[in-house]
Image (cartoon, rainbow, N blue to C red):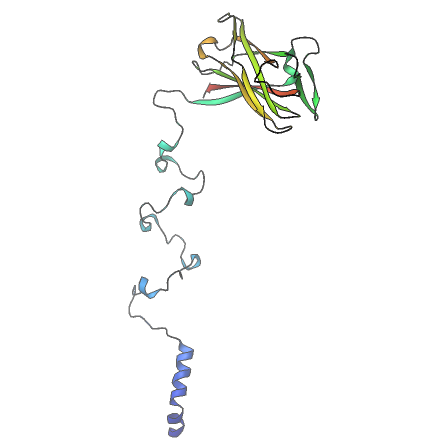
Length: 247
């Protein structure tokens, strides 16, 4: 037996090392530090629930990319990043009134024509004739006093080029604050066939209207203007009036 052990001692040692690995029992508690752990080996599953608390996070180590949207409240929010009114100012929102082709009135019977184009209503503004349409609406009661009204046309064309738009507005009731006021011509470009374009055509000044006034808008294509280079019909899809509303 002694001879067997002596002749196989090295083999027995090798087997012991292979089976036991290189684990070393550390004395006492709390004796494992960062130097005892291989880099990048501690995984999520190795952490106990609620093991990582706020006191264990390095200051400034958590930014917005690591926070769930809409999860922060109160003192956790940097108010300078929010679009808040200044002290004493009234909260506002931007609202839009959309006037469809069916709500527009041609200046002459049947001209410009209001019909369907690609199954959608449109006002057909001729490339060789100055046509116009009119809309009547009340200035919204929730418009923020001292703010203007921005009027835009949404249009497209079966061609490319610039369409030049002419506008005017008047106060019908209870006014008049102003009789008739014309806006400057506004050219909008159709960059591709049947691609909708929004062109701002008029800013009604803040002091020109009061909330509740009945406003008349007239919109025309100034086809005779040198800036109008669109050789086909301009198809008006909507008139949009944007304004600041009190919150």
